[in-house]
Length: 243
Length: 322
Image 1 (tube, rainbow over the protein chains, first blue to last red):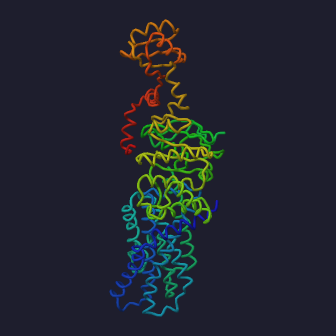
Image 2 (image 1 turned 120 degrees about the horizontal axis):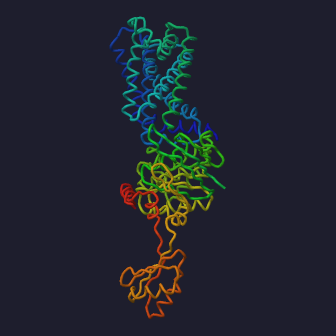
């Protein structure tokens, strides 16, 4: 059994069926764009470079979590997801294929503010390798969070509600727009329990050399989150969807 | 050769026992029907066989593969048609089939050629480029069956394949199931249409309250409830006058007049029709009709399960009738 064929075709099907649909493309462009504009207008004197890591992190987080949670819940309610569970492909292949499309969508989301900002500021000093690695890892962890939500939700509206339950607090707790050092003391430990904090810190390093944690630590924590979330998602799928 | 072997299978959901210690086997190329009302445990049984549900106890072996231990290996040889179509609404018929084929690792040329073959076989060639959501119920069911056949499975599992669809599509699906038998495919299907099971199944199992109440060929099931043979004659003379004549000529046969022109003969042995007809002729009586009366499969079902056939009829109506 050639798992690569199944993987590639699940990814292609998701991209065609969901991610390349006009409403999603427009969401992928309008959402990050409007947040970028909002931040720029709200703080005219602020350095765009300071805003970019937060905007990128937020775009990836919102794009990936909502897309995966909604598409999987949608497929499950229409029973099409059953087709994947009935196929002779391993759960690992299936989970990786499902998150791959979302990760690509997240990366696309991430670069909307970057492209927009490139018209206003010089981005030549940015460490793009580091930035891309951070975006990729934020996208994977967020996609897995979306998958975790999808496993718990029965309906699309439930998936959306659950996603917001995670996402909005992360906007404030992960240092995207408010530095963690300015958060009340009791909230700071919570910030360090969230993967986006580490991804955003790497982005701060990549864009303006302003990371608070070492890259090794941040990548290590993100890798640990990825592995942990993957195992939990896989376990939950196996436990909840194969009754 | 046994293709499906189910042994002491049990499934509980909390305090509810959906399937209670059932065992059956299906031979290669056989069409096996699980017949029973909603809630009898048919779908739970099927879900365990196809690997969508884990048995609480028991064993399922498909072509020598233990489904519990090697679920994915077993799924490679099964084609599944669920009770509701599970294809992608956004995709057209052809793409749905190609996607299903890709899940079984089939290469592009192979899956496209197989998809075209199946669309033509199910007379869906022209609908192949239409989105699945635009299909009628019958077309949806046919494409779902086509998707289940895309990888040429050894075992085809169909859950209520003809429920709620039009007469012509139901007929085509039945013909397809019989056609697959000729090619050696083993088929397990559930239905609550007794006459459908009787028409196409080699063997049937009656399910009620999670248990198999009886199983066997249609003849065996009928045999299980009646040991007497009954023949009925419609004549142009008085049936009452003939009862004594026939009674005196046949030992061990009970003769009763049913109405003025109709009588029945009941015996533990088979009653040959011609000698009886000759006696009528001797008496100058013409015979309009003489035939052996057999219980219907519905009678057998009612007798063995204790479930009134009206329960199944109601489910037929809910399913849309045919």
